[in-house]
Length: 429
Image (cartoon, rainbow, N blue to C red; front, side):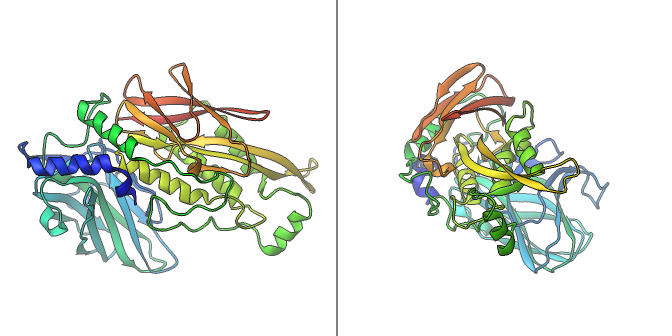
């Protein structure tokens, strides 16, 4: 579905393939010394813990620190998977090999694959021996990837991991042996003519939805499956007790309420933390629901917004918005022996990524990515470097960042008498 939308990317890839791999290919290191931090896409991630990008457990049999560490444990036997994105991706390849070093703390089946304009490649499986470093050089032909293709992500996974077994996977020295000079990655924040054209074509290929933002129904548009809801915090008995005390659909604890307030009004934040605030705040509210099927599933919308950003090489970014009434349980006396239900409201925005690829990006406001029960949508104004522009539903706004590195975007939200001025942070690469 996403591939049909982004016709510009497919067209550019096809033209490159027709012209042949004109540039002399060269080896490109995606991750070698810890300086090329990446990001694991949350869409489809099943590793129990997020990656650590600069781990140092000392020299591990030819694997020198820092290296990537992926760890965790589950209570069921499962496959652990994730797609890694690096600053130099996507890259147009002319054959050659994928190179990487891998090591695990347990005997386990390891798999590696590629994602790009060709879709998802074949998986190359390797049996890892505990505490032994293996160097892999996998021909791209064995993945089913032909020369002229564009590689966007490197997928890694552990398969049939036993339950209740804590496993750590180390990955290092990831690279492609044959990538062209005209590849898709960019080492600076300037926007060349080819990346500007690609971004424009992607934007033209995007179709805004006709969904009513207050509807709880969302059919998956950009991913093959609908994500499960956040797990419910309350038992039915607890729900019934709270329903008798409030008309609100969500009741959170006082500490959760304070956390929400602090993140929405934070003046400084890392890009990675900023990326998580919308998701985390919606998690706090929606999992504490008293009724089912109240609003659209925030997890689904977040992962789909991330898929759009990834598909456009992080140059087209959907804005996530939430406008929800909720309540919180507050202490009614100094000893907190009794509690009272207080009304509150969440009006917030967010990005599905911590970074963007170019100094110019397009920000989208699609009603599909708004979680609300309000019949009137909030007005949105985006401010960058002191210059503000309104962003209306089913419209886009081009942002031109002054430089690379951490940038602050001020999002002003207003609905009725409620006004929120929120700082979002993103890294420009």
